[in-house]
Image 1 (cartoon, rainbow, N blue to C red):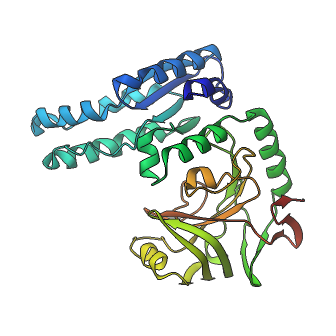
Image 2: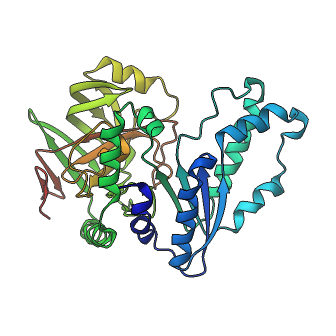
Image 3: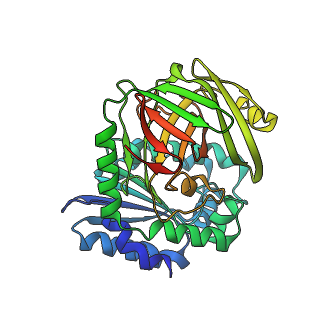
Length: 345
C-alpha cells in the first residue's frame, strides 16, 4: 500500500464543506508532487476548492543563497495571499527545517518569514490540519526503523473515520462538565487534577494526522501526586519506570535525571501540567516510540507538561512533552472511567 491509496480516507475525515477554499501547503520536492496533486483532486471531489503551494527545501536553500539580503524582507501584503483560505492542510514529506547547506547568514530572514507564514496560516481558519507522510526522512527524525514507522503510520491512517468521529463525539459528550481526575498507576501511585470549565477537544481527522484521541488542558495548578510511566523514549533513548511527582501543578521530582534536566532546559512553563488525553485509534496497537502515533493508541492515556495555550490552557513554552501509559485505572468524579485498557464509562 502507498500513501496515495489512503488519501481518499484521509480527506473524508477533513469534513470539507462545499465551496470552501483549502490551501495545501506542501513541504516536499518535485519528485513527490503527485501526492500534492492527488490530495488536491480528492479535495475537489468532496466539494472543496484546492490551492496548491509547494515549499521545496532545495528551492528555499537556493533562493536564500542567491538573493541579496536587501530583497529578503517579505512585505506584509505578501502574506495576504494566504488569508483567502478557509482551511489549511500542511503536508510534510520532511520537517520544515532548512536545508543542511542553507546559508547561515540568511537564517534570520528565513526564521522571520516562517514566523509570519505560520501566523497567517493558523489565524482565523476553520481548520488547520497537519499530515506527516511516512517517508524515510520522517522515520529518521523519529529515530525509528523505516519499516516499523511506515507500517505503524499506514495502520494509523487506514481507519474508518466515521466510526472514529462517532466514538470521539460520544465520549466527549459523556465527559463534558466532569471535573476531578484520578489516575492510578503501578506501585500504588495516584495523580489527581481538575478539569473545571476546560473544554475537551477531538482529534478525529480535522487536526493532527494520524489522528485518534480526545484531550483537554487541566487546571494548571491542580496536579498533585505521582504517576509511574513504565516506558518513555527521549531523543532515541529508552527509559523504564519513570516516576513523576507533581505539586501544585508543577513537576517537582523525576526519578530519571536525564528527563528532568531535559525539561528544565526549556524556558517558560515547561514543567507545568498541560494535557490529559485518551487514545482512540484502534489501528494503533502498540507503542513504537513516536509520540504523534503512540498517543493515539487505543487503551492508553497520556499526560503532558509544557505548552497548552493553543488548546484552552495558559502555559507558554517551546516544550510540549507527552508521557503515554496504560493505567491501572482512571476515575473521573469518583466514577470508574478506564479499567486497565478498557473505557467503561
